[in-house]
Length: 286
Length: 87
Image (cartoon, each protein chain N blue to C red):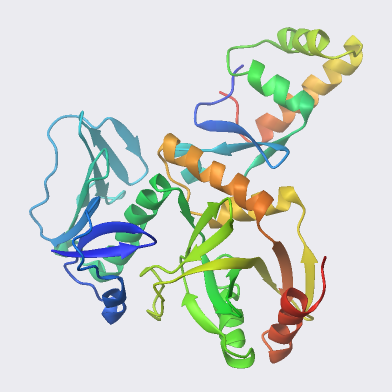
C-alpha cells in the first residue's frame, strides 16, 4: 500500500480503480517513512460484508450499523431495498474500506472518487480543515477560490483566469481544503479535483473566496456576515455526524471572520477575469 | 410543542444560526437565523413547551408587555412551523 501526504495528512490509499486520480496522485506520495494516520481502501466485490442484526440508524438509501469500534454503512437501492455497496469505518478513522459492488451496474470508478472524497473530507475535518466546493487558482502567491453550486460557472471563471491573468495556475478544480490558522486562511490542493484531474500539492495563502453567479454584466460586491455563512454552509461538505458538523461550523466561523469573501455577478468573457482581478489585486482596499 | 431533533444552534461571526445535522441535513441544506428573542425561544423549545409557557419565558427575559410577548411567540412558532422544525 502506498503512503501519501495530502494537506499535511499522511494516509495509505489503495484504489480498485483510480480512474479519477490519474497520475496526479504521484505528487502526494511520501517515501520518508512518515507515520500513517489513516488508511482508505476500495475493493471491487459482490461479496459484501453486511452486518447481522438490525441497523442502529436508518436513513434514506442507507442503513448504518454501529459497534464499539466500527461504523458500517450499507447503501441500498430504495426501490428494491437490495444492498448496493458497503463502507466499513473504524470510529477513529484509522481504517476505512469501501466495498464497491459490480453487480449494481453503476459507474464504480466515479463512486470510488465520490466516496473516497467524502471519507477524506471527514478525516480533514478531524484535522481542522474543511473542503469547499470551489475551483481554486493561484496568482502572485495567493489563491482565489470560485465557489458555486455545480453548473453555475465556477470552473469557467477559473479557466478565464488561467487564460487571461498573468502567471495564473490551477490548484484544484473541485474540492480544495481550507485551513484556518492564526496566520490566516490557507488553501490546500487535493487529489479530489473533478473530471479534469488537475490539482497541485500546494499550500497557498487565501486572497479571496468568490461566490459566483451568472449575469449579463460583471459586478463585484462585498458579502455581509450572514450571506457569507449561508454560502459557506451550502458549499462546504456537511457531515451527518454531529461532532464533525460542529467542527465544520467552527471552521465556517473562522473563515467568515477571517477571509475576504465577495459575490461576483459575472459574464463568461475575458472582461469577467479582468474586472475581478483588478478588484482583488490592483485596487487599494485599505 | 418542541424543536425536532437534528438541529444545532450556534453563534457564528456575531449571528445566531440554526443548522440541520444528521438525517435532517439530508432533507434541508439551508440555515435559519435567529434574533435575540428567537434564540431565547429556541432554547426554551428544546424541551416541551406550551404557548403560555413561551410567553412567560419572554416576560421573564425581556422588558415587554404581554401583548408584545404573545405577538413575538406567535410569529416565531409560525416561522418554525413553516420551516418544519417542530415535532
